[in-house]
Length: 559
Image 1: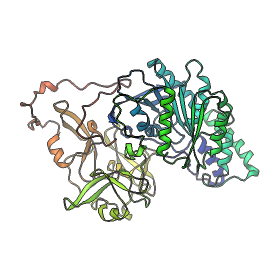
Image 2: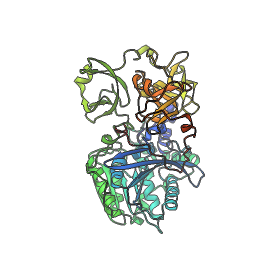
Image 3: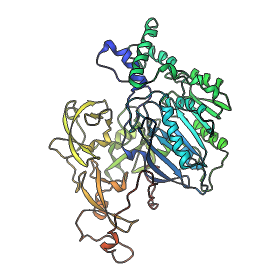
Image 4: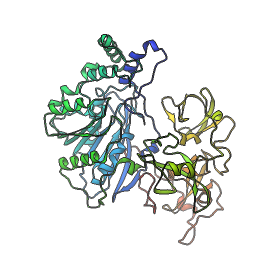
């Protein structure tokens, strides 16, 4: 996921300094993502059953904002909701850090993409100016739908500034609690600091031209994004905020320096606390910070954990998510979360296919075949390798301007595409998906013209195949499509995203459509008749809660 401090350089170095500053403010790298990265639509965490509902809300500019509501299924029907507001290069995936903090407490979580971010409509961000109206639209939606439930805010960077700019407007039904992580005090001040910071600017601006440069940036921003950077000043509004607010600040943050949060804290007009932690602007927040956030919301919502809650402490998002959304790499950059590898199994005496599900902060690698066990540098060198039949040699790496075929999930077919960029990790950007680098683990969606994806491995299915799946919960065969085939020949189905089926499992549970002679296994006697499955599955609209599958014997890989 892109970090707040990333920028892209222009081709014309003569305009680089002005362009980079303009780019940093209103068009930072945009994080686009597939829907499955939000995780399963139903899961359980620390005894609390959770459903996720995806829908959209229109802002006042008639732009569609993509939203996800993570709703704990607890007895108390009026549990509060916290709205997570992401940073300027982030998206609603950033809210997943709040999942293990809030949901076990019975607090619902609303994540959404601001306009100009993620997969919502819009071309530019505004560091809080237009985003405050996006937030107002989301709050209006929640209050209309859930009139008796309290609302809290959790903002990070741009999202934190958005919260400050919005809260003084909440006079009738005030927000009950707020957390502000790495909030800036004044955009013009921040722009001036970044303009002279060589870490974020390819050519830092000297003081003598800074004022003139900011004037040019101000005009460019106003022309493109329709707001004045001088108006984006949380410090001018925070004195009107009386919502109980916890300020979080990274002591090593050199993007939004700690002085910004300190000034905002001092001027805040209500109950407040300031928590400094060891970290920078984009670092993973420590567990102590997450625990402080949890206790802050519990205190000011005046609630207790639900009865079904199983105590387990406030874990970090990497414990909960396995690091899937962060794409964490080992220190040497060799292995990444999501990489398909081979593992030397002592038990089986051979190399077996495996998936890297998490990488710890100290570089340990966890595999799906060795859950809750980390392999470190020495073991990585001897026990983990990339599949030899599919490993790209240096001269076989993807090349810029190379024409390939890309499997489009939307159109469900292979389409021609041109590679327009390749980064150091062999992730590629396509002309048909500009602004998004396809991670290595999704390279099964790419193939060279005339070659099958991941050639060299036998598999009865290819991406896009229309198949039938033996559903135990529904008691029979249901229609499905193959959405992924990995280098080891395992497949994923659209009805079981995140679950890889081995060759043996494919033989028992998957078949090509129209092969009626293969009877489904049943422990209850005769196979159900075709009439029993004649009724199509219900179509779920955007405002319905997704139907929950029955609990499985093994937890989802999302947990």
